[in-house]
Amino acid sequence: MVPIHLDRSFRKAKLSMGPIPALVMAANTMISAYFYSTKRSRQAVIMNLLRSFVINLAVIFLLPELLGAEAVWFTFGAYELLVLAVALYLLKSSEKNGVVFR
Image (cartoon, rainbow, N blue to C red; front, side):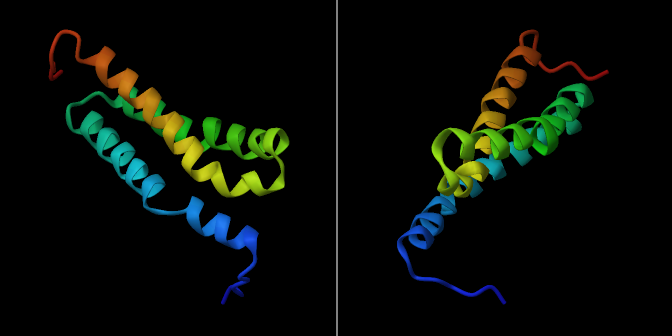
């Protein structure tokens, strides 16, 4: 079990891990599944690699450096929002000519 500390930093952490990052994560998962189901594997792989490695690691290392140690609690929401922006761009650019099944 993880001990629960009721100090100010814990309350900030609890608020930062609220429902909004989870909803963004769900949207990212749905967009990725949509890419796979419409045989756009390249976009799905790009999105998942960015989500799992590139943006995730960049945000985890850079956000605390820029905003301080407590910013580590906001990394989940930050990288999911960045991946959502990339996913929406990929979605828009891949549907210029409509959905084409190959």
